[in-house]
Length: 397
Ligand code: PMP
Image 1 (cartoon, protein in one colour):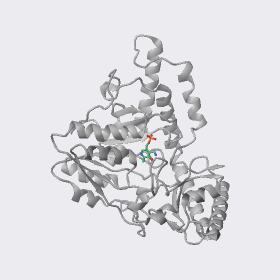
Image 2 (cartoon, rainbow, N blue to C red):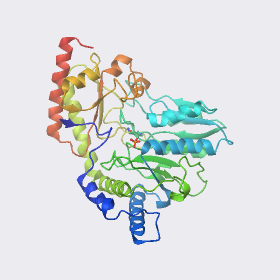
Image 3 (cartoon, rainbow, N blue to C red):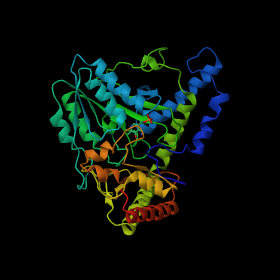
Image 4 (cartoon, rainbow, N blue to C red):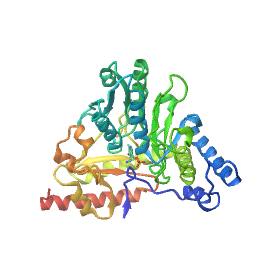
């Protein structure tokens, strides 16, 4: 089978595995055990990896907090800031198209005395579908707003938000800005200073690194970003997130990010070309294919891309995406029929674009990545077009 579900997760790059291996059974000390060489060597590996990650993101090493993944990072940022700043206010702002790992913590806060405003995005049919106008953020801010959370790149439709403009709005009002950059880091240039974010989540397994490791960037300097730790215990990472550090994971994520950044200039072009080939050939072979999310060649006002290079989401209208995936068989993609195996009903992201339930259910999401080739794209087009034709003949919904 061909793997084109790189937004769900990625294959760990063999070069990453190689970098991690010594940290399982050779350099296995606890980086917190500074009294002996085992601990010191592990501590040193973590220092080097942290420095490398910080450099890739134009951050300071002290600004990186390791977590178990982006879900935990999002929870730490949102719940941590909300808990710590509740005397200043209890209003939070986010977007309808965010990942569940942002929406769920917000929903929980909504049940315990906070108020949450979820903003709308540009609608299906617009060449900027899914894009959040920074003006909407400005209009949503209140005197008691403490945090805005906006993702950088969407995991379903690949839309890239204008974080720098949103950051300017937030800074002007003294409101903290969190960004879930899980799908953006390693795929498009991410410079925390240029983006102007206060907190930013990312994860190892989306960038050809291991699963179970992620990080939260927390800006240092003034004004101070205040938040309450959510996992307490041994006081590791200055008490900001306790628990023995995942040394192989940290080393692996650092190597993974370094490779992504080194290869980014050519890889972005290569993936955009593959994606365009996939879309063009699908549209040639299949009737009534509609693109979900922003136009693939669309640019933001600041001149940046509006869509992740490797992302494609298309709806077929009259067939069920799950049935389509079953029919295709040899292609690993995901469908908007369910947002995830844990979420019943069609994707909340597609519904937020204004797609009807049936159209949302008929969609496929492709996530092209490092190991995909143009031959695979051509095979995918073959498989999808045959399956669509067959299901349409059967009149299956
Ligand atoms: N945010 C976004 C945008 C994602 O795509 C994902 C992964 N699907 C997550 C958060 C959660 O990341 P993790 O699996 O590292 O917890």
